[in-house]
Length: 210
Image (tube, rainbow, N blue to C red; front, top):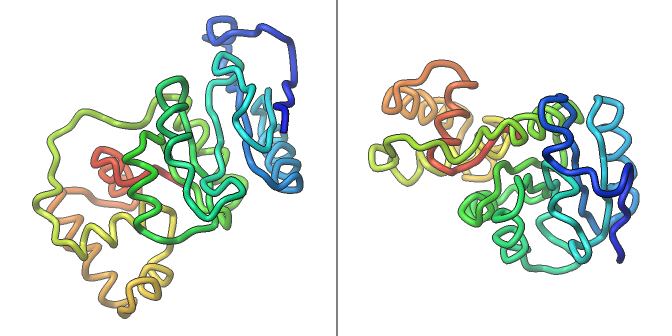
């Protein structure tokens, strides 16, 4: 499907720098999803400058953030697409998948954020703003070695936007056990509230708000 470009042709990042206007490209192979996302983002003051079912024909200078579906008409995640576009713009990946490995592979491929499709419109908007502001891949000492494999899985779940109950079901453990792991992670990483925990996961490349 050919990309649909919206707005003034040739508008560059430099032209919108300093205006506070965040331009977004949307890629999803479901037209209804594209329509819904465009409506929600534009209602929040974002500028949707491109919509498409795939990335063919997209101009990386046409948007500040690319919101990209993880599974584009395939049973395999589009990791190559993420790698390609992450070298050219800020990529936020969206998916209905709750698998920790999908979150981890997405972030390793260079995405700025991973948003679950069940999240609210407000979550999408805040994540796009965070990506546009460059909140990702922060250079910081890596405390990953302090975390056990199970603690990393729990942190990955939080980075992917899942609740403690959802993480418990995913891992086959109790909510109480998840709470205990979160307390341990906070202690090991010297963070307090959920926002700080999420920022810590960003520094580790495990995920972004979403």
